[in-house]
Image: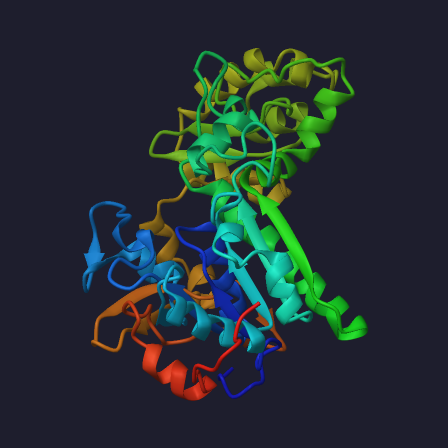
Amino acid sequence: MTNAITRPLEGLIVLDLSQFLSGPSAALRLADMGATVIKVERPGAGDLCRQLYISNLELDGDSTLFHTINRNKRSYAADLKNPADLAKLWKLIERADVLIQNFRPGVIDRLGLGYDAVAKVNPRIVYGSVTGYGPDGPWADLPGQDLLAQSRSGFVWLNGDAGDGPVPCGLAIADILCGAHLVQGLLACLVRRGVTGQGGHVEVSLLESMLDFQFEVLSTYLNDGGKQPERSAVNNAHAYLGAPYGLYETRDGHIAIAMGSVVRLGELLGCVPLQAFADPKSWFDSRDTIKAILAEHLKTNTTQYWLDQLVPADYWCAPVMTWGELLETDAFKRLDFLQEVTRSSGARLTTTRCPITIDGDRMRSGRGAPKIGEHTHEIEREFGLILKEGVGP
């Protein structure tokens, strides 16, 4: 499909005052779905994420991380402590549908741009706030950073094997989940605004997003006498699931095996010792013994050999693939999931597209991440940012 299709958020104006990952990832998703996103950045330095490198890889002076999460946006340079710049920003706020900010609690209010002040000027605005641990409380002023939120949430005790210490996720999972929750709240308020005409204030935090991510197992803990999760000592993949759930080494690689009858698995694989575990309760109580037997058996042949035994029987399994292997599969190519974006300087980046398809439109955009303040003059002309007395709250 082409970009000629009207996207659901076309016509909406989003002011993105956020930095790093959680807020900008939410703004990115709104941009993917058609919104005009204006990224408000400090002159000179811009979003600190521009210098947050992964693998020391940069493109055209900025980190690839910044390029990836800020594509399809326009950059407006404004010093929020400068009265002239602030007056122009207020005129943008008057026109905006959504504002996103992730300053530490209290900072945005000291700048005069808190929700109450903004809502007085634009009652229809949907205002999104991201914090680390909520707007108040004893942790409110602590750094809202992904690894720290993972660690405080208890999540790190679900990963790795029983003999390991705490193991974090290898991705900025708190940031990305929090950004997704912010999008959900913003869209819900926009729907309500369509009915009532009134805007609203959406608040999310890294900690709450990580707790929600664990809602199934945390609920088990809350209703099981406070019993701590017990990770399997052998190939743990889920602290609350029994055998055979896990990743296993084969003769030439690895295979993932999910839920299923241990007895049936033994039949399909020709592993007689597994057939002794007929009681389903033993699949959790004796999971380490079962998984140790299975682990040794699977080393005797190749990944493809085992897949050929399990897949036709609809036993849930999959090869453990690298990115290189995945990208060569017909299944991945069928998704058409990659796109190339281009900056005004000509710098190009291959990245992923929006994962949401609407009305057959696999939403993509070729516009790369902006330079700091690249669109300042263009935006000022477009929105008529002519200073007048009395502009502001």
